[in-house]
Image 1 (tube, one colour):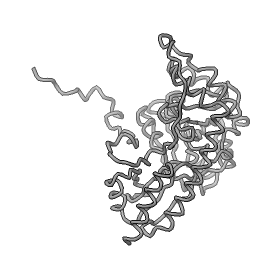
Image 2 (cartoon, one colour):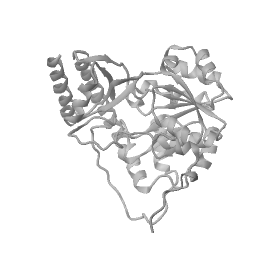
Image 3 (cartoon, rainbow, N blue to C red):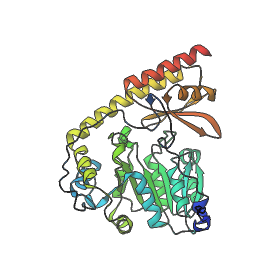
Image 4 (cartoon, helix red, strand yellow):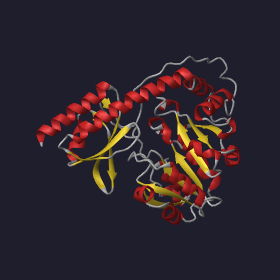
Length: 357
């Protein structure tokens, strides 16, 4: 008896046509230097107690919620712990968007999971541009947003690193009051904390801030994030979230990562990474093989090379960075800020390219 083919008619049309998000780790690459996933180069050690894994965990661990609320300068009722910021994106779409009816607004190029999540739930995409977001007036932006239910602003933006000023976010939120929710994704905000939109929550009921421990906190493997918003906005999300989203082990590690001494250490590491990033930007700008270096925030630099072959050769040599097609050109590269030894490999590569030109 031969196995029959999977009946494709069981798939909804939107899932059948779905283009899955291609993460840095989904590609089966081999290399020696890994600067492709915007991970922190720092490792952490934690103490764990595994004696009570036979019991279900607290759905929202109080100690973690209290610690993050203190860190973010908010009340505990304004904090929801999620499985990475990605779960926050999905929860907002599932909670506030109606299948086959609503749309979300994006400013491209930006983080790919907004689109994938919307496509998964059969929510339309209102594809706007980063140029409009950065250079347009609040009136022009909100006019283009139209009747989209959610507006995603990645700030700093991945992969360009650009920043949208808080005054503009405020103006957009005011114009969209009772019409839409402005979602500010702050995965990289620790690298420019003074630009956080969390301070706007005291004045706005239609702003959500997404955070993560994956970047500056050096806990990408933990898959821990937070949704920050006012109580009424979070109430329906709390009904939609899975009953036990946070494991005891994750809660223990997150709690330790949010202690005052750990936060001080994180900020010290951010200072070091920002300094290393500034050096990398100078190396790139002085390399004759480079066409454009984007100025921005975050623990990465996005750069356009004159020849795509230079990027391909680096990848083949084991120097793994993140190639991108941006602005319909396939010679872009995003370089994560690694440790001194990793960035030295980038420097040597750039020096080699410079001598070949």
